[in-house]
Length: 392
Image (cartoon, rainbow, N blue to C red):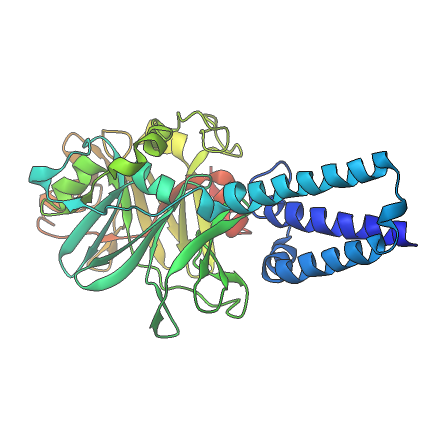
């Protein structure tokens, strides 16, 4: 009986440590099942599980250990050492917040002092005429950068395994929260708030486990494009500079912008509609649709509509900076074609630039209203937008 309890205690001790990290980190097979409830339970009760396992082991050894043979005692000592090693690896090496850190030195520089190459992709945000840009190959390592724009607190997030950049307000139930990276679910980064310990999905801003399950963070509109395009739109923008303390970590993401990074989790599938193919996704109310990046690069513009939203998708000549605009002007839905200066609408022949501004023709001076569009891996959009349509 005591041998049975010893085995149960050891299995519980080892299993809880391993499974706890297995479910929230990208180990083979761990990210494809709906196991977030189990992971959250283990994370919250791991201390109690350890105590219970130790009590079972102590009880099993009481008054019997002295009768054990040398090989049995040696095996037990080996298992204790093995557990010590697993405990160290799990709690000090494999957990997300022990692998990825926020910047130690957060330096946002004006254009005159910027050291980031202008061909780098950025996630940009503008609030009350103040603009800031966050290079993806920097925030991709940190996963989150907490900042303020025009006095408004924001949290800039990025998941390189989903290729999802999102900016949120860090206020939860009226209180400004701090967040730590806790792991991932379905390959998407998860953050834990400091107060309720709820887990928040990076791609959607939705709490998927914990007391606040079902609540959402307020998303702040942002854009992704090359820094050169962002500075053309926002010449007074500040730009996040690399933190010298993390040069090695940034170097490991070299080539991520173009999908050429070495990591198999983050490298792009160059074909269309593969697991890690690039797509552009648009959501309007309860409708969502994904568009093949390769098709956009080939055709330069895609004209389509979702319910009550006629829009145009286009990419600039740099084949990296993309835009989506509502193509309704003065209650008239416009058609578009490419033009040497940018775009031309087929209704009036007016010419539009890549800032969404009409620069020539009957509609000169008019602005197209931006539509929120995301570039991400196909597996990410498909997972977090079930039932999505696809633009063939």
